[in-house]
Length: 168
Length: 289
Image 1 (cartoon, rainbow over the protein chains, first blue to last red):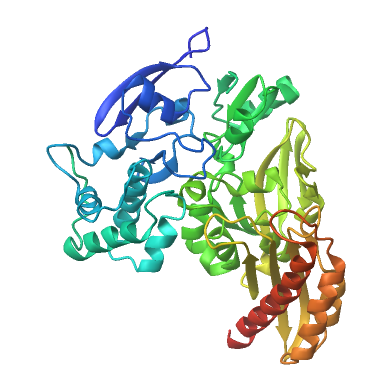
Image 2 (image 1 turned 90 degrees about the horizontal axis):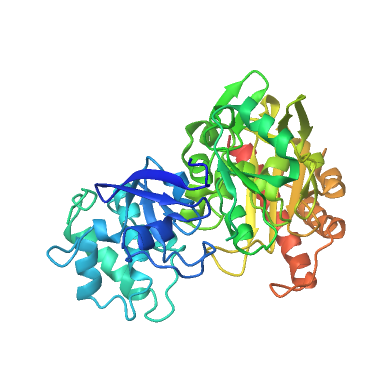
């Protein structure tokens, strides 16, 4: 830590080493969005209920609004930008798009990250397991049916292949 | 969020020394799922936040001569996945999976759940039913208390301002004992318990030799329903009327409140239903074991 309370942090975000100087109260979400311009992860409730800020840290899904950026120092972070972009869509992103699984899209990055965390651990979940895995991600416009349809379709079409880390 | 100084000690001694030096100016940070929410909503936050994730003494789940030791920084997800918990205290897993959502369980710790000490804490009833002990440490040394003496009231524990919760111990005699947990909420996901309840029984030669019933969310803190326990203990397994009587007695031992989630009257119904079910389930485990 520097004497003025600013911490130098270095972590891997979507396979790229990122550095920033952050004050201690900066959340990982704020660092992602404000320091590195990775605005896919969203600030929703800011208290860990809505899941719009969900990212993977060392492979586990967490609420990035509840983790300090300094706590993420040295760790491996994956955000929605790490799954795909305009040139290439991750199968989950493609299925969400094809099935119109979201309207406003605000919850979708968190939903897709939670779905990826589930499929990395369990490539063939039951519908109940999908629902439980997404219980920390709230949608206020489309509803959940099409989200579950999209994840179910990905499991069916890509059995065993979804857990592989895909880069942009 | 108001700014603070962030420190991250890598040994228990360093952590305890910092707590003694800074007293109430310092807040330990475990999983952060409660503390960060508090820090975002207070104008009067701590001067120092101490991340205790690097303190090795707070980690791990292991068998010791005294029982199963669970480090305070063990996350709910780690409890869900721990073979030692599945083998010796599977009811802890039944409780852990009802806490928050995946993200909160990946971050939140069992120690944090106990220290925050809301009346509805979901890890409380099973641990009370298993006679769990907690170890606290300060610079002056360690001390151990039964969990029932650790819980003092809503958001109040026996932890002194310069003490850290180190671990939770489930005594050897309790390991593998038939135990059941039930939680009632307004929905399945991310619900706060309206009532949560656990029962633990020891059956010998067809009789119930010991009973522990713990109720959560229906008193200022988790309580033992000792009168209900007294009704069950000594009776033969298979007498449903006894379980019904115990369930009704448990209702009289709780002090549920009316709030926007549920009425006290509804909570009393849930206590009766929940107590009956956990007793029935624990006894079923005992007779099929």
